[in-house]
Length: 271
Image 1 (cartoon, rainbow, N blue to C red):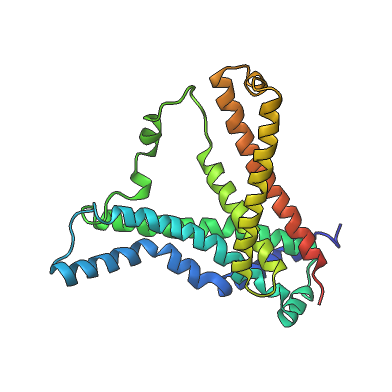
Image 2 (spheres, rainbow, N blue to C red):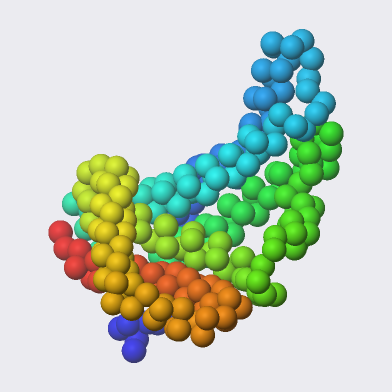
């Protein structure tokens, strides 16, 4: 057991890995976390240059805030694994990585903690913190902070066939984890052009899966068009619950598979 997981050794390695992650993508994390402030300052500077005054209405900046949130997440789950662990495929850096006093399992577990827990928590805290501060200091020109937006009321206005209990936090984490783990796998497989090749692999995989599901679904429906409805007892409430549960389970299975593939790839690295 000590050869696989030693709590004391793992604790030391995790501290080293966190420090190393900060050195590799800490600046990127800060920039992404402060993106609301950066966009707000740039927006106000352009308003001052072209209009001669600062903008005091939040109507114009609201779409930019929405876009900045999407950009923050996408860039984060692409950059963090690539900058943090992409060097393991390089001969010198990879050899040094393999020589670190920790088992393969401990190195893999540390990766999972850094990318799937520490990184999104730090990024989320910094982003929400800067967004909240701007919303409190400039309520008219920046708008309502994310933490004060009535998301529950917005979702309650959407008509549903049944009162569904959707775990939005779990969905958000699952999307982050599956995305960042896919790019981690790409960073550990490809030696050059890691991001570009990973995106191409994701695109190709999406086409293959979509085609396979379309063919399978078409054959299934041709066989018996009513089977699909019978599976859900032809009840929209039961169908909605089963579909949501299936989507959530599929997402977590995807995360588990990517974790397993990352571990197998880490074990196979040799220099």
